[in-house]
Image (cartoon, rainbow, N blue to C red):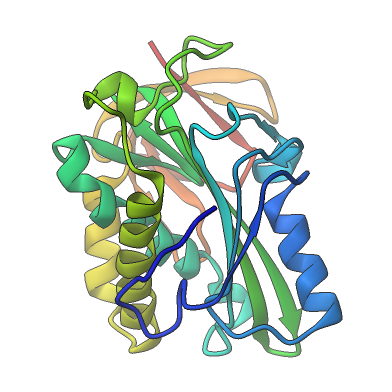
Length: 257
């Protein structure tokens, strides 16, 4: 059971705890369909049995060892073409919360993964409801590997694996920190401080201004390029032999060592 008391205006002030569920994002969507929950409502579970990532990729976590939850936000101030700004604000808020615990090593791997030392430690899944010219609701799903130390794939890691504590990490305390820092950045976005957010995002962006190997998934061709940023619509910008190329979700794969 999660009992948290974040120092926030709305994120985490209302919450639902489910011992087990298929997907907190699905539960949040069901809640929206049958009621009118306040902005900032959380759906938290200890055991997510059918979690998923961007475009249907699966997300699995050991029961009771990690953070798996969804937040309901109402970003009516954003147009559908601006929805990646929500990703930026949420990502920076998460990094703010975890920086003191990770020695500042947490990186945001475009578009929605969280990495420490070239290994995945978490992921974000944002699902938006568009109403006319605005985002009526956003369901922000978040999974973070915290106390789990054994994984089926070598590319996964956790806070406890990278920065071990004698008794592990206190999950409600972590959730409280995340609520507080995410709300701060969300309100910053709402107030129009995009330049500050973008600068903070680029500071945390995985491989920013570094050369690396990539694969264009449309042609299956590999190439070397320098990641130079993200454009206004959320496309990844890569400089290849002096020419800027843009990639949308699922059009490019990072080739890691």
